[in-house]
Each structure stands twice: as C-alpha cells, then as structure tokens.
Image 1 (cartoon, rainbow, N blue to C red):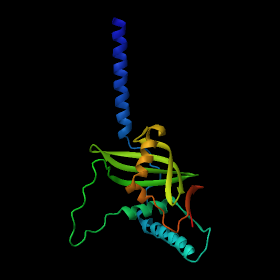
Image 2 (cartoon, helix red, strand yellow):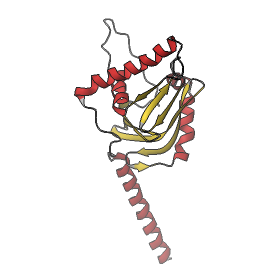
Image 3 (cartoon, rainbow, N blue to C red):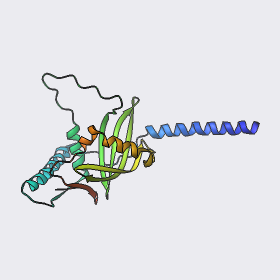
Image 4 (cartoon, helix red, strand yellow):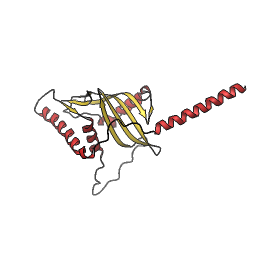
Length: 202
C-alpha cells in the first residue's frame, strides 16, 4: 500500500511539473519566423507588392495568359502591415460592431517562405496574456479560393500535433465569413510557394 502511495505521489508531481512546463512553453516567445520589417523600406516593399498585382491585372486585361509574378516575404509582410493598419475614424463614426465572443484579436502577423512552405506567426491575446501562434504549411488554390494545408502548428514554443488542429482549422476556413476572405481576385488563377517566394499566376 505504501508503495502505491509513493507511485501516486511521483505521478502527481510529474503531472504537475509537466503542466508547469507546458504553460511556460505556451507563454514563451518563439524565435521569429522572419526578420522584422525595416520601417525605412516598408513603403517601398508595399508599393512593389501593389505594382506586381497591377501587372497581373493588366496582363489579363490585355488578354495575355500564363503571366506569373514572384513576391518576396518582405513585400508580403509590408502589404499585410498596410492592409491591417488602423484606418482614420470617419467624421460621424458609427458604433463598431461587437466582435463575436470566440473571435481572437490578431495584434501582428509575420510570414516567411522556405522552399515550398509558408510559415506565419501571429501575436494574439489569450486570457490577458500575449501568445504567439506559429503555423506552417502549403498554399494552393482551388475553384478561385486559397487553400492551406498545415504541416506544423505551435502555440508559444509548444508544438501541437497537426492532426489535432487541422479539422478545426479547415472548418474555420470553410466558414462563410472566412471563406470570403480566401477568395482570389478574378485575375488570379493560381498561387503557390516555390523556391522561397510566393508565386501568383494569371
């Protein structure tokens, strides 16, 4: 009986230690997936992103087919910063809609490309604490929408099995509100990550 009690105490303390380690890893700041944007080059990269998109749109208008443009991670990150920057309040502001209870605010986003994999790192807030979510995977397109198949998922510095999160992620992406955000412009026929760049084709 005494032996069983000792085993129970060991298991209990081991479980407690595992929980503490998991919490520490959840809240730990992971290594960044890419270098921070140089503020001096932010506008230049954002302009380059828009110019390349315009090149695709113009190619379609001219009846050209098969045009491809390549985007670097700094160009994509600069475009994200501009797209998510707070907009000036209108003269007669309307009350902002209250976010859904399950909606999690994204404070910052950073992406990188490695061979054919895209990796995104998102800073969010959970229970009043800043937490980093890192996800990697393969980008593609189907029926005019972006698709994403994850290969890695981390909360803080804690790895989470992809098999546990992928069903919920795909359901979230299929939600009508999120699916609209995944719709590609009419002049975009496909996209992929290749040789460390985002490739978009017309």
